[in-house]
Length: 538
Image (cartoon, rainbow, N blue to C red; front, side, top):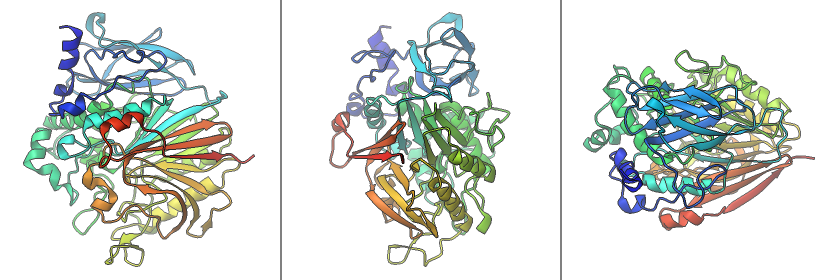
């Protein structure tokens, strides 16, 4: 088989998606990065379907899937170190590789080999982050949300989402953060009926058996058809040299955050947990250990995971320049009224301790659910709900909402505003919008002395009815509990955010693309529509 036939055979047909040919044909070449293929040269994927890495200063964790089960154990070569693969599924199609004891701030050549030393793809490069005490002049991080969704269910075509990614990668970020909703295939929510139609069952190859195991049963087949269509076909191998940090949100547990007299979807049930954990194990890296994050936080150092990784609470630490705190608010939420929390109390202690620590220039919070705005959903920080007049109000009780969630919100906001010599910044997703604002008041807390900058990162894969105004009858708005100075009122368009960090400031750049008025080709020349400099106090 020659190279042209090979590339054709490993395209969309790998997933059986029926991808629109004209959109797939628009795929641009992989962006040039140091050590990667030069511009104009395609990187040879071999038998690899997708690659997603994560790094710290001394470790690398790489998740990969292949177009057929591997016979024998693959190996990852990292510089002069060889790492044996660990099978993530039960059939040999998904593997993970953990390399430890690496040198900080070093670019390594990586290569994947199979039985007999056969190359599984072209070599590539990946760098570790600088050491914790390293002084860095700059870092660039890409943020986005809601990249999931099956194009067979009217989500943005995978090729267009990949095109958005490739435009973002042209700006050569040092890392990327994917903030929740990597998969949409809700199971029990009142709105989940669309995923149980004959069309959906055909796309997934069946219905989940909630009484059975996820891996090692037909549930594994269904999960892979869903995950490969929504994750592998979008990321492909384009992020092979860009460490990616995945924060899970409600849909990653295969349900929407809903509550009524018939069902409350969160905290996640056992089966929801197994689906979320299996998806993470198969497709994207858990969070690598960090010296300042306790190994015993919930869903950390689990016995069926390797290397002391954390599934819910993560750290992106880039020398002394920036520390990004990543946290899933769904898995540990409680329904305890005034004492309820989203984030486990021990994890909250960790977040506040890291916010108060002073060894880095910038601390950024990235929760899976956004402080600053509301669309009246049940699983939000705020009590606002859509009233009879189709306006948000707190005069109507939001059923099953817990007042303790807002108390924890205020504790975290207070900790951020109390930082000395730093600008508070929150970047989040979930609300399917691009937005920016400053939080000046939260309840009785006066935050004007050090306002909290909050950013909606922008969604990658939202479908027509996924926008807040389409699904809920209202766009994202500031809740009654807050005083917000909105620099960018939430815009319901696809997009992403890039933040540049230097010792003296953070520079935010936001990008948007309108599926209703712009062509896919316009993505290739997107430039920021909004820029802001957040300068540290002298």
